[in-house]
Length: 293
Image (cartoon, rainbow, N blue to C red):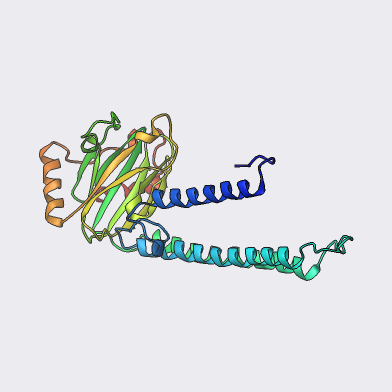
């Protein structure tokens, strides 16, 4: 926000200070009471991979904070050391370039980007590693504007419908709900029936795009029982904001009971991915129903 030039200096300073305080208060309010500065204001993660995400996030911000302090320190030092003094009637020498400084300003950012790239690639590779055998495989199907869940090993499914956000109590109970057993490795095989969606469970600090015709995968190990929220993180059409779902992390016994309830409701078998606008590529078909091979 640009302040009017005609305001006195004291008034401009006061207004700028007030705006700064309000900005800080807003950040603290939006961060929520559960977020901690030691976690980089991230929500506490509820799965094994969340520690890796948090460490990368906090490490990145600490590095940027150090660089920021150095840059602002140099700026302030230059402003004070080379400020105009009484009796300075002539302009200081005007230099066109300084080769050592220009080399430094080129090399340092390149090195910083390289370091960020190495650490990001390392953690992304670990978070997307699906080499371990999962205890449960769930084919999550995104569609405009809801979700279907195929539980592959138990051979049951749940079909979701779009959330009706009426503003009245009880809407959350109508959302499709993904059940996950506590401390068990779950692999998500992500497909889309129509356009690009993005499967996001904020409590797990992970999300992954769902590309028509492809199967994207990642694994999680939930570490805390509870009910969490999930949503689509890719603008996918008019009702994108209503593409919501619940995630319930439960004991193995409760998960088995949920599977039995789905079977009793007539939800045995898996929903067919051939309903997708873009057929899943042949090399990915075995990921959606391994038992068929």
